[in-house]
Amino acid sequence: MKKIILLTILSSLLMTTYVFGWDNETFTQKKEIERNKQYPYESTTGTRYQYDLTKPGDQIRYKVDPAAQIRDNVNPRVEIDRQLHQYGGGSE
Image (cartoon, rainbow, N blue to C red; front, side, top):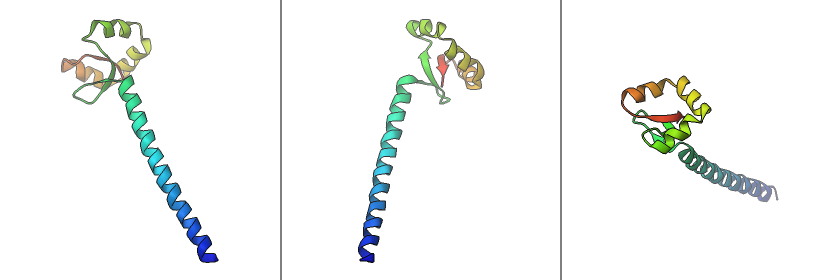
């Protein structure tokens, strides 16, 4: 009887680990997809940006987004990208 209870507990633990591991992977994938939607532009330094400032439409959206401008002012990698002639706006 004790062996059956022990086996039941062990199998439940294995199933729980499997399910949570799968859910965690799915959650991570969804989070990455969402990140790619919000910050679709990436410079060669790896900085992700919300806006591509070589596009006129993105330039307009960036000018009316003070939060994006503040993020750029405090992120030192933005200046490096600008020196490399990469013009993203609204760094992650």
